[in-house]
Image 1 (tube, rainbow, N blue to C red):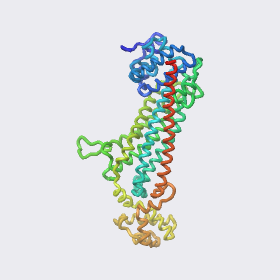
Image 2 (image 1 turned 120 degrees about the vertical axis):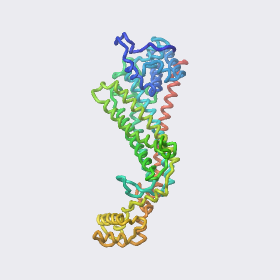
Image 3 (image 1 turned 135 degrees about the vertical axis):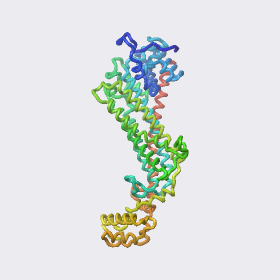
Image 4 (image 1 turned 45 degrees about the horizontal axis):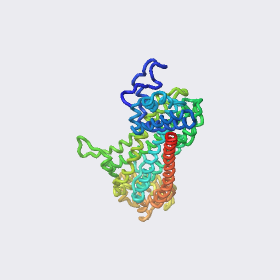
Length: 500
């Protein structure tokens, strides 16, 4: 091909329309080509193979079409299709430029912009899911690899932004592994609904040509065709579900970034981010800004905006939202691409993250986070009911803060005095029992219930999580292998047509 293409396919002026469309409208139709070009290319090839196999196309014509489509790949799919113009119809445009309409004009037989768009959409989402799922499994692996090193790295857990109870850094790591395991589960479930083929549904009723929808579905690696042609093209709950699944995952990774950003501040000083995740100031040379965490946090807002956009666009009667959807698809693709990239940055982040273990330990009980177990000791050893012990310990903490008595120097005698001051008898805990309930690490070791932070319980959690991760990784590998096998099957089918 050489020179600027003049063929406009269905948009040629002088047919239904007397004028060319406004330039920005034409560009609007083409904006998704960079994302979907490889998948539109695959659909063009699978459709052409099927047309030849079902003898809907003359063999000679089919061979020319398939050779032309392979020529696109030699030139570079994106480059050749962009130069050919026509957006999702760029394959037809390319073939028409190369061979003329007698060849190029036959590729679209039995199809519509409807199934071209929706096949491209589903295959592109499938590719994005494979990348996201791979990134999630790598992130989960990194969390599980780091956790055993921090089984006894005790730290203060927070609620309302205040010290709540001691936990461990390993327990925190496993929390996010569990969160990302659920994100993985949601994406895998969504994949089963994505991987259904709309090919052959045209714009709503299919075609009176004897298209083999099952064959095209198999060549593209779909599990099966969608069984209702109207639903296949004009129902778009798929995009709404995708935006919702991405929104949940985006909020999860944003929360993780929020934690690390807060902990990296001078006031907290619990972690130090690797330099490559940071920036500095043009005026303040001392600054080490957590740019990478701020960047990840922005995904939450982007995902919410995308979900809102998708939901608003899908309003209205069946078949009305068409052009608007190109905006929401662009936002979905951009969000998924950005999320995969950020998840891919997490494994090396956790590998090189500097954890200030001593500061975590020092702060774990510095602000009375162990108070729950002091109250529990009054129930066990002083015969108090829970509500009374809760009242006593609340007074104990307030009295100590007023007197400047920190947890490190508080004594059982201080507890006795506080109990008497609140109108109750002195519990008279032994020095040994008092020391044990004041120790944040002992607080953690006592939490040996299912899912708790005690080191031996967390070790069991790690083992269980590794099994779950292995099962998910196997399922993801099978999905990717099926897509790869379909690609090989398609190329073999093309060889069978071209070389026969």
